[in-house]
Figure (tube, helix red, strand yellow):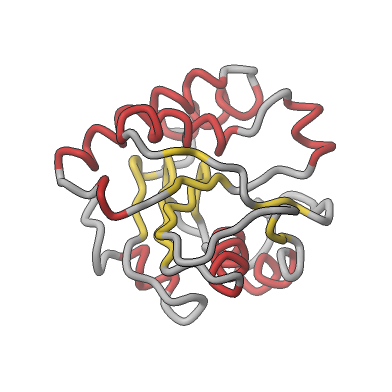
Length: 185
């Protein structure tokens, strides 16, 4: 997927200052991408996230983009949800990216509120659902950093934009977005 001026950047424009929004796969209901994401999230297969990150990272290196970022930051899960799942699927994706691009991975964000799933919500409901949910972790410093923010899937972009805006408000130089998959609302 083109890193600039693609359908994802159009979706995000107006929600945050955006230059790059990228996805490794196109999400399709009942397709292979949905099966992979379900195995990653609900079947205790974190290695799928690592491998997807590794492969996507190799393609970004091939396009000479790895020098664009100082740090990879995963979208955080609520501690209760992470404890139940045993891992954060976005962090696993970030680990693979980190390994193949040789960029450090840091958990710089925290989720302050437990939110219900976004899957059945409209775009407006999703935006409202993630307002004031994320914060910079205690002791976190993003001043002047060029950040690649990663998540498992992007639909409306509400979660990623909420996280990116926190990072930008705390002094990040710029935030680009990368996900395993992208799909419609």
